[in-house]
Length: 377
Image (cartoon, rainbow, N blue to C red; front, side, top):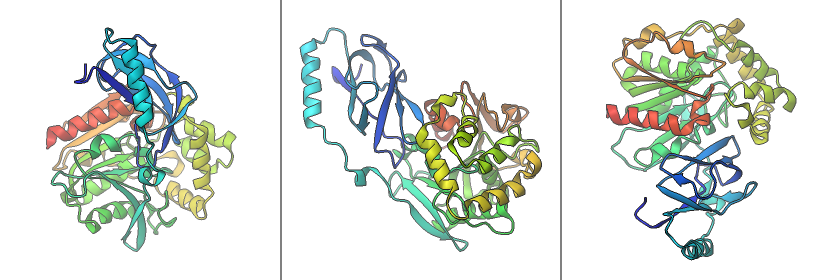
């Protein structure tokens, strides 16, 4: 039980741009005994449906929010307390909470992206966490066709103790829709240049999918920039690409009916793909220059459904800690690629997750990543 006899369960804040969340379903009934880490309810954000976990122990005495309710960050979802707490006390607690609750202003909740000139490109990024800290910062790098918002469920867990940076690779998000003659080298130099330009010192570099291949390239080329490397459902570990068709499906999808099945391949549970996710992805793809950038990048990195930038053998020689995290049901970069890794790579497989475990199974992912960083620091 928490230090107080009654504990409020509130709408979490996932990512720097989240303002509200919509209750999709309750996963426990009133009267259920709960412990820290139990799954409480499914909440839909502008990106994906995710699960709210309980923080504290006790009995779910009241479900305040209803299915379908869209609530601001910090709003009351429910109440946990011991079974012997009187209903009148629960009523008083709920009434007082609702009376005093003031939603955060949108401008205080949302975060406008920053930008920094790196090799002549204005790279868009966001920063969370303390302004000044002697703790090693984290830098997240997204995958093909993604952007920094794909890490929205992971930022808060790390930003309490350290600076956390997320960037949009060239051609993605709000960064310029430009690539050099060697598209992959452009991405790699953007990441290493970002670290140097902002004088971040050593960083914990975490890359997903294509971003993992980029992160491995940075580590191989200049390991002095990194305190550790974490690769998530990584491209760049073999020449094969299990979901080779996905790249072309994503590039050529121009309507909802084509984009939806492509995005559903990213998740073990395809129902997590929201209408908003589909719409936002299509909106990005319709921006001037995006089609050319994605096509050029696919030709350079994934020609004929193969991968030409492979770093598996070089991981063994890296003078820094390395972790690999995989969704057990990944259809794109098969979990088999996690087998036979060098002994210095700590491999973690997350059950019931696909290519996006940091979104689909965020609580487990965050625990694994946090434990890895705590262990090596």
